[in-house]
Image 1 (cartoon, rainbow, N blue to C red):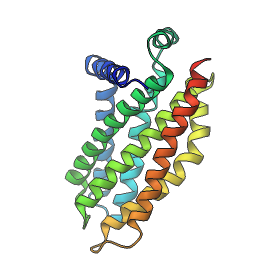
Image 2: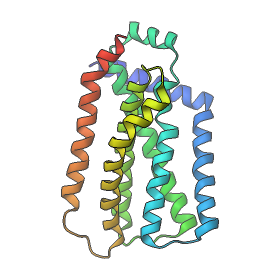
Image 3: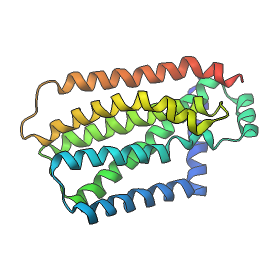
Image 4: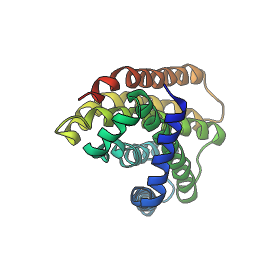
Length: 218
């Protein structure tokens, strides 16, 4: 694994994103319009509804922001990357770039959410940390799924088939962790659940590290 190559590939993705801006503005439009529609419908919902809506919107933001990262790469461009970088460097650069993008979108989503739908949280700083952890976890999973789906013919169908059994338990765990921030006193078990979520994230990174070189050769 070459750190210089990884940083160069990350810089390439950042430059493409800042020059084209189609994906970024599309995500921002989706984020703001979706939350505004929820505001028009529910005004300021109670805590449980607020929490559920937040993670549903986070899921779709991640699909729009992260899942297209590999699907947007043409075959010719992938062949070029094959000649200048190792598969591990390439997939790690994608993981880090999508992670940074999703962290930014998660914070922006939380800001717009609290601005329009109120702030029912008792532990706002705790929820910020949980939001960042959730954004990180979702970005890693969907980047890994996109890497696999990009090598298949039925890309969209494969994303849905593989993503459903993986993302549902993760969303349930995130919802359970984040619900703690709605109580005035922190409950027991928070750090154990965070440790489980962190372990899942590490497992996804290891799977990408091990499996992607085999996909790269196709």
